[in-house]
Image (cartoon, rainbow, N blue to C red):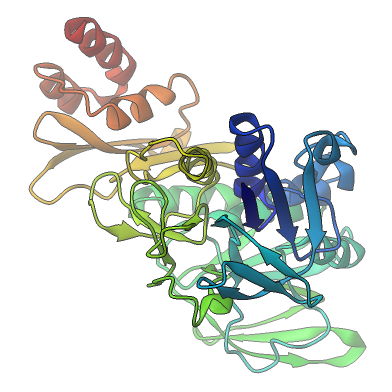
Length: 415
């Protein structure tokens, strides 16, 4: 059996290893388009802070790991998938035949359509090459503007602040991390980072970037303000890498459409990770959910089915955990609330603590927390287990801090 995996990020590596365990004799090829060993983008901020070296970003630290497993690494970009011939054409002109193909190509950073976005000191923060450029320029005292305060942007923010730069963050939404936090929670995070010396502009966007004397830049904002900086980081979101699939027969929407087995519209082709538009845990409809825990789960399910097993995903669940300059926040499931459901919100702004629980009937379907680090996994457990809370729902509406007690109580009752 010949397995080809396009994409050597976390999903690709997990799938390759799972395939090897399932089939010791299979031929496995893992394709990546960067001149680096397979690495984790989520580790780049730790590289920028100096907590790890480049080798610390590598997904597997043993240099002979893939060779030992009989996984062939190919450095090239996939340019075309011919599903009829069952082959992948690479940028180095090599054609890889396959019996089963896994697409785990992840995402690419969005390039905002702003005049001046192509100036030399404007960078995304997505690859190790980007990190090297940023590390060379984000010296202590440097003036840095960051566009975007989403999940990825907030992780980058942490690294830049630790480098001692003078940082200003610009976010189009009305709060920080608007796609993982309620309005009150997102603005509580904003207050926290402002207290730590980071300037934040919400409800604002960059309209133009121009060069000024001394190699600096001036960023004009939609709120009428202008900010001078030495370095600009663009963290304005990502989109799935699917352009090379044109003409392949693989159906795509915003991402690659897959079923519960991670199978695409072409039976021999599977997909996993950020590139997928998979069935939502609660909605039952296709949705993008680009987070690493889902990517790893999808990779294992895809690999199992590629090797002949019958395995299904429960559905893609929102799982977000963020540390922003020491303030830990989480959100799970339908954190915004369910239609026709009930919710409770606890706000302690003075102590930067926040808790929101969202219910549908007597089941917890979503949760958001800030400042809670103990037992928050119980919130995920209640949501993912679709636990019927019974009387515990009323108790949680009265005191949401009792979620761990409710978790244990409901579990004992179910047993």
